[in-house]
Image (cartoon, rainbow, N blue to C red; front, side, top):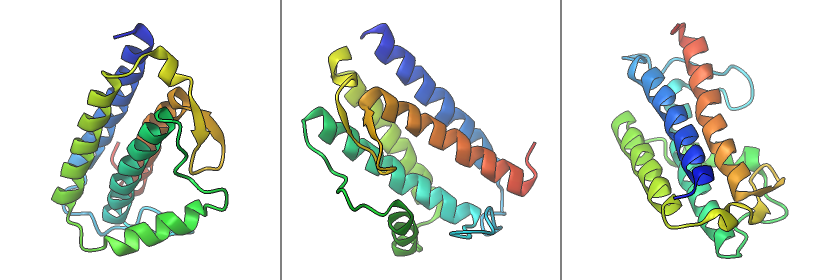
Length: 158
């Protein structure tokens, strides 16, 4: 494995470790609000969003590697996020956390099958920006950290 892929795997792993450390401390407060604006999600709803987006990021990364685009030009990220969480409202915390672990393992295994040239392939991200696979992997790590910070702040977890 190249040092570049190894660095990305380490960044993803560290971000997921941080997210899991925050999630481990939520306790019985999963129904407490994390956001008051926009989606107005609780900690559990934000966890479901993380589960859905992680699976989606994996699908997007692998499609870009094959030369395909999964994100249409008229994609509405806010609407997608809201509806995907609504549709999975019955997902339990344990199910969402297990799915997050599975998608992280699948991504790590996939990264073991590619080379550096694959990291440079570009495609449309849900944010509508054209990004390389390496950049999307950094977005994934940042997404984990951002939402972990949001949960920790909202619930007063220092």
